[in-house]
Figure 1: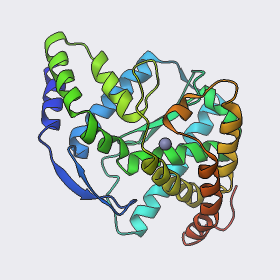
Figure 2 (figure 1 turned 90 degrees about the horizontal axis):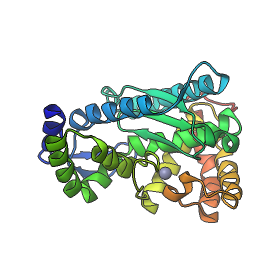
Figure 3 (figure 1 turned 135 degrees about the horizontal axis):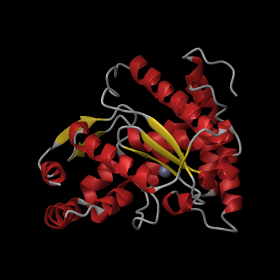
Figure 4 (figure 1 turned 90 degrees about the vertical axis):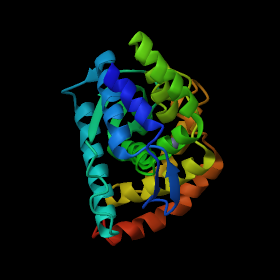
Amino acid sequence: MRKIWLSFFLLFFVLSCKTNPFTGKSTLNFHSNSSIFPMAFQQYDEFLKENKVVTGTADAQTVKKVGQRIANAAERWLNANGYEGYLKDYKWEYNLVRDDQVNAWCMPGGKIVVYTGLLPITRTETGLAVVMGHEVAHALADHGAQRMSAGTLQQLGAVGVAVATSGKSAQAQQVWAQAYGVGSQVGVMLPFSRKHENEADAIGIEIMAIAGYDPGEAARLWQRMKANAGQTPPEILSTHPSSDTRIRNLTQLAPAARAEARKFGVTSFQ
Ligand SMILES: [Zn+2]
């Protein structure tokens, strides 16, 4: 427990300013990979322990397959653009979790969860690639970390104290839930800003195309998401405001994503 408290303590003092290769923007982050990833990995393992991980089914295999292809595509793009080693601290993992929520997320360092409730809407491997590309893009662009830097430092202070005094990690989980959208049971989710959503859409659609998935599916997926929202408001919409603008944007981005993929020798899309 002391170690956890120390990690949180370090968070306050690790200042780094770096240019994100995906957005081209210089962002002030209070966290470096080496301080934030170990905490993310710990939170991820804890989440898996407390939830029902699906193993050995075709769906579970598809989640791992799509995740692997998306991760490989991200790495190819980074290497081609002079960012070798950007993913060196990443420990990719892709798990399907039995839960009716329409949601998926990617924690820092490449720790991905897809809920079974999302599958009726993604329908196919390509549909799943849209969502995973988008969530991985949030992680690669450090959106969660930026949000933590801006809004949750004070809270982390409280968590540090709570962990040090009570040894309980409930509050720590809540901070992670808020920063990364990890499920509604553990905390109230903060929405990513519209700017971050647009960035994740733009990065995600390119990654999926480089992975060999048809980027035209992105707009169709969000249409299904919108249609589904009428009956039971999906969790993913509370963090991911859907709109006709988004569907229009994704339709416009698809040809450029195909062109980008062609640079990597990808000429046919599944
Ligand atoms: Zn998003």
